[in-house]
Image (cartoon, rainbow, N blue to C red; front, side, top):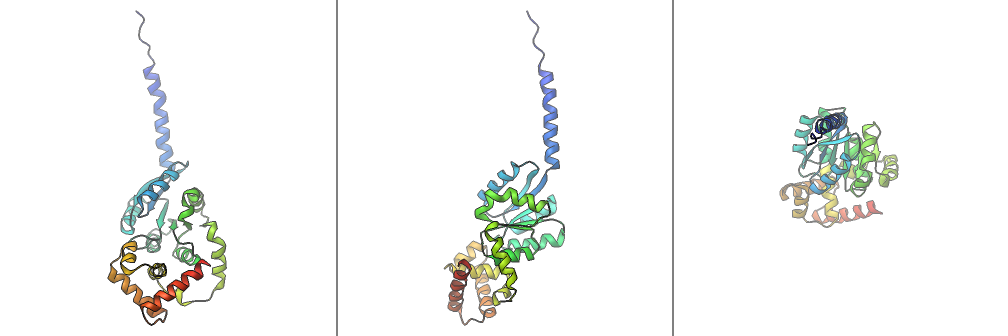
Length: 239
């Protein structure tokens, strides 16, 4: 009878260095936290990021408070945050991150293609602004640029942003807070108070308070005046 072949030990020996190398690569990869309240988009972005050499998603959160807790725990190299998070917005989260971790870059993910939102995000300390319809295709480029210290703005709005910044004139809209601006846009899209509250993760009463502040800051007479202004403003932004 022939003695059994002795190949097992050598195959195990060759496998170990591969596992060690994979773990080493993972440790050396730039670590990224994603904060977005849409699980499907979060997972999709995570898959794309993890498929690129040198990047790894080290944590996910669905809202700003959990996101900030995760950032403190993981201390990632980059945070990707949705601008429209329920409760505190992505811009507020950016301000909090930059206050606590001044060197930690933030890339804002947004459904808004108006330059005003990008301008506010960048002014809050974000290093990049990418619109959601381009995210799956452009996220790797955006992450790479921001981690290299370069500002990234989606090509679809970068030219508009430049023109908008050169206008320089301070308008009444500029007096609105980031949350009031979001409420104004949703009013312009025909959303009722309860719909806005649901989308932004706020109570109807809080939305009504924001609408009152909008009315006062824009010198409008009533809620109907706010709605008319919102529709007209939104049409101008889309033109």
